[in-house]
Structures are given as structure tokens and as C-alpha cells.
Length: 143
Image (cartoon, rainbow, N blue to C red; front, side, top):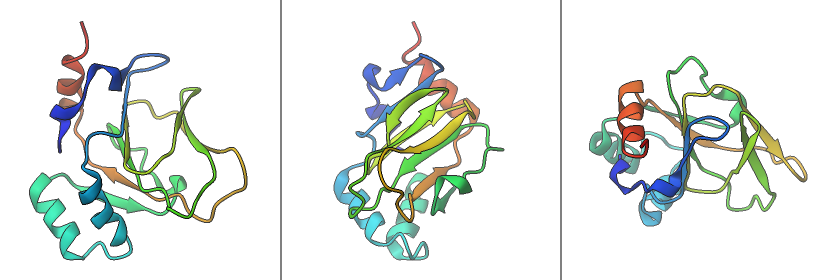
């Protein structure tokens, strides 16, 4: 993945350490994946998988997140037609659920919050990030 594009302002340590950013993945590439989210066997997903060699699972909703993973590496695929404002609470800190946004943390106290009407689905990709990769990313920002 394009972790080298992370900047110091993407790193947060209050209330827990987490990365929150919209700059990791180019919008054009994201759009191709988004358009084919209902067909994970499509060539664009195969190309993504072979390029980044990072396991992933597409989730229809936050209720499907696998909390047994060491690192919660979530990539938001918010529906274009979903104009509601939604958030993910990270240990009580709200970060906005917006398209092509990454949230990465080891904290498991994550909760999805919809501020207005409930939307049918709130898709996301859960990537398989090792604790070692996450710690190496954090080393760049911890001083």
C-alpha cells in the first residue's frame, strides 16, 4: 500500500494512536474498485491484490468487522448516494465516515454512528495489516 504518502497530520494519539487519512489511495484507482465492489473477482480487484499483496475482505457493514485482527485497517467505501453524515467512534473520538478514507488503529473500541437517518449499508474494506507494519508506520511519527 502507499503508506509512504502518510503525513504527520494523519497521525493522532488522542485518545489512542490511530491513522486517519484520505490521501493513501488515488481517487481514480479507488473509483474503479468502488464501481466493482459487488464483484471482488473482477480484474481491478485482482490487480489490486497482486500489486499490494495485502489480504482484504469487503464488508457490507461495520457489524461485519473482524475484531480478532491485530490491527483494524479499514478503508471506507461509502455509497455515493448516501448523503447522511456518519462517523466512526475511536475510543470516543469521532472521525467522519467518508469515501476513500483510511482508519488504522490497534484499538478495538470502534463504533459506527449515524447522525441522521439510517442507511441500508455502510461498506468498507478490511485490510490485513500486521502489527509490525503498523508499528513501522508509527515510528515515522513518534518523536
